[in-house]
Every structure is written in C-alpha cells, then in structure tokens.
Length: 455
Image: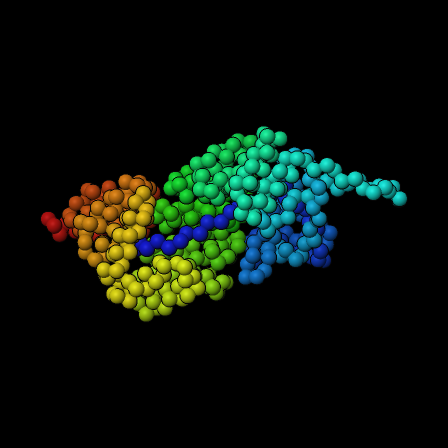
C-alpha cells in the first residue's frame, strides 16, 4: 500500500456572517425551516406569513438560493429556508458606529427606522453620514476597482477618525494581503480581533493568511474559532478542511467536509472531499464526490482533474487521460492538467518530461514542502528510493507537520528494514492525522511482516 501524493488545488472560501443580521419577514403562508439547505432535510420549525427572522448568510445550491436564518434575537433557533420565501428590509442609514460588513451576497445590516412624521411633514433630513463609515465605504469601492493603495489610504483615514474600528483594521488587512504584505495583514487581523472578538470574518481572514504563510496549525485554530462564532456557516468548515488538506492531513479534513455538505451541498465541498478521498486511497469515493461536483457545476476543471487522479490510481489510464484533457480544455492556463495527461499517456509518470517538470517546480519554490513531496512520490513509484527519501526529508524540514510525507518516508524505511525509523514516522503521521488510523494499522502490520522476513 502506498500513500498517493499528487496535490491538486485546495479551495478555501471566506465565511463572513454579519454580526448584526438584516431583518426579514416571511412572505408565504407557511414556511418550513430546515436543518440543512435541502428540501429533504429535517424540519426545525414552521413559520407563518409576517414572522420576523434575521438573515445571517446565503448560499447558492444548484441555482437555488438558501438563506441561513435565526430567530429575532439571533437565537435560540437557526436553520435554512429558500431566500425567495423572505421579504428583506431595505437598508436604512447606519448608526454612528462603524458596522461590520457581511459577505458580498448579503445586504448590509439595516439601521433603525426613522420615526413617523406628521401628516404634512417637511422634507426628510437624512442623518449626516459617519465619516469613518464613509471612509471605509470609499475604501471598499476603491478595493473593488483594483486601486489597492488608495483603498489603504481610506482605511487609514477611517482609523484616524475611529481608532477603535475593528472593521477598518479588517478591511486594511484584506487590502494588504492583495499587495502581498501578508505579515502586515496578520497584524491588522490581530488588532481587529482584539477590538471585536465576536467577528468570525477576522478569524477567517487571519486563518487564510496563516495558510498562505505555511502556518497551517495556526490556521486550523483560527478556523475553529470562526466555527464557534458561526456554527451554521458551511464555508467555515470548508476553510478548516482546506488547512488540513494543505498539511497532508487528508483523513482529518473529511469530517469538516461532511459537515459542510450537510449544511450546503455545494460543488466546492464535494470537490475538496473527493480530493481528500483520492489522497487517502479511497478512489471510488473520490470518483463519486467529484462526479457530483460536476453534476452541480459542469465546467469545474479541478473536479475533472480529481477524477483523472482517481482513475490514475485505479490503473484506468484512458479514463484518467480523458478527464485531464477536459480539465485542460476548461482551464487552458493551468499547465498541471496537461503535464498529468502526458505522464499518464507515457506510462503512469515514468517519462523524463514529467521528472523535469517536477524538478522545475522544486526550483521555482525551494521553500515549499509540496514540490519536494510530489517529486519524492514520483521517485518512490519509480524505484528511486534513496532520492525519494531525500525529497521527503527535505519536505519535512520545511514543514514538519506534513503527515503524508511521514507516511511515505515510513514505507521507504520499512523496505530498507529500518523498522524503528518506520514505526516512528508512522506514529508521527498518525498523531498529525488521526483519521489515518486504518492506514496506520495496515502499514504497521506490513512493517512487522517485513522485519520478520528479514530475520
């Protein structure tokens, strides 16, 4: 048994429910609130026309919009309803304090309604906009138009006006990340969290930054905090799963992906779970999930690439080639698909061309563990065990929490009769990724058997 290692793109999403959810009223006679975003999900409660709810976020599932809602106080109940069954309130001018932005698909939190005037009122006088809010809004507009430095200037101005604005720090963090100033962005997130520790978006953003900086263990902690604050938001679970996948902890990612799919069966959730299955040796399950991702989104290139990987593992090269070709057709700018197709066509990655591409990947990113693991896996498959061992070891020097690298290195130690080294690596692999228990137990039996034969 070997741990298969061909890393596709892990997809992470922003999870940003509003801290002050916009109100809405039920616009149908009877509305069943579901535990998940599906008509077949368990009913939580039934609402009547005119009942008030708060919309915390929305998700798109096969062309249908589902709203995650909560009771008038944000609790004690929550669930999902079709968004077209709700009539949302129009946003009013916000209060003087800086509001927290929701996700782009959510309307801003509504402010207090103006009091009713006399029968023949004078022209209404709109409240003077808060200057900090105005600066943030201008910065967001500049950010959307690609004027990142000008956006940062506006967020700085907002902080000069309102130094306690956690939202301004958060938006400046996002702008700094756009410029590649990741450590600056992390510090802004730190300050945003200090000022507003109940905002899941700040933890999510910092977690995504930690992932980009290779600090995946810290990313998992931040995504866990986001889940505590927004337990019904599927993207929070997707993000934590992505952090596990980036560490090679494939089996540990699956429970979070299960939860994300139960909440909202979106294509990206099925794709990421298919990817985790493909890297855990469960290729049939990977095929089912990535096929479902394509049913939901027929132009999903990465789902085709995941199918290519699974069929490659199952020694079905014609199917693998077909899916790699379709992935390349859908996304011609991504050369990984054609490289994978060429490798399969040449005999399951045995060509000089594929090794040259792996060498090039290592040269382009010498400080990243992934390219060393991919090259090590190629050498491992092709019997170059000493070189594969060096690659896995180099990867672990760069990322000491890459579970699959320990697992594959253990196989090489076991083949060489170095039982204690193999056992140590497998124990570390299992400690990092407890979901690998079944693989761990099989490999340990293989190591014991190999050691007995050596004697």
